Length: 283
Length: 283
Image (tube, rainbow over all chains, first blue to last red; front, side, top):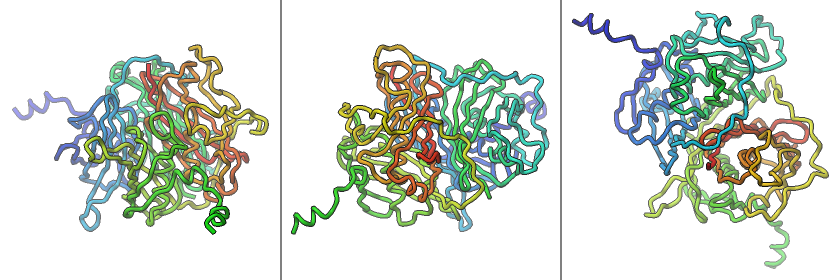
């Protein structure tokens, strides 16, 4: 019986496993880091963003869909349990403002903030609309080579990433490239229908622009990430498990930090999200 | 004697007047809205961003200079007194993470959140650096016409704004332009040496991109603004009271919200800040 029951329930996607939140009280959840999305010294930043967004979406008082999310990576989340707090601090007629944080016990047992965030959700109505940054014309994902599996970080194996241009340098020879622009097709691996949480995580899959510009793997890590959601639930459903085209570039590398702007379109050319981050780099 | 004393003390700049914070407790301040920076139904968003940043800079425990600031405009600030809270929730070796909010008494006297924000400050060291979005070549500010004074909103008179391209439509005829890109020279009016707070405010002086694209003044307002600071104090000092070149463009207008990306350079071509916002628009 037990075997039959297990066989009839399909395995959950690693993303859904990683985003399981146990509600302790309204707006307070417990979660666990997922080995499947582990980065070097903590979880992949995208999975942390997705987890915070999931906390908003799971809140009983939530109004509307995600409009913006800003996540500040204050410190690495240690392997194991953590607490997510999501508070709707102001609810208007059609927008709602959230403050979020992730906490873990520190060395002395007292809670330490590892992550701060804010989010806005909104009820959106159909209006005059206009795409003002059309998707660049590129070849489709079919036939393009995937980024090699078996990289030293786990989370990369959770994504099907197919660079069109601006791939990781082949020779780490310290020679600077002439552009920080990368374009790549991306989706969850295994394929999974797109939703707001998956989209938030995808906004953070670009490798550090400083590696492209320096052809050196200097230590680097996102300090603050912002995602603006343009997609409706219907557009996410229409995108399904298809690839997105992601584009990222840096604007300024200065004294230990660079900024990155990014856009994500589905294969129909609809911009689903735009994103920005400021990233620490060493040396 | 009183007259002589008054005569010897130069009048303060309206920006400094607007940013006066009275410390009630560590991280808790009282402030007043400034008529000089009034917008239509509340203060100019840039002055609110600058006020929040001032609260960080004035905090006795602050580490380093501003690196990033995200401000979420949850509701209009009413004319009069308001409370600013600035908490350093995590201090690392070279970065510090802040959560911020602005509160005013609501109809029943209980405090209501009008604004949420997060900020990161950082001690920066000299590293390999590279400008990756050079300042566009344009004519200088000299000889360019200033945006007309006497607009219906007060705050516009606090800025010397000289459009190079993408100025406000001359004819509000509902005809859509072919680009949402604007470039303009900008500085405080009267001229004032640049600092981080002034820079944060300048990041928000661009009129709503939807006006440019629709040639219709539909209601619009910033929901969330992010500023990444690339400048050091020394670079701000070197910029002095010179004009900055600001550039802004929209990426996507969709169902009531559009996003804007912006860059600000000084006249030497050094990028001082990059900025992003998501903006509500009606119809």
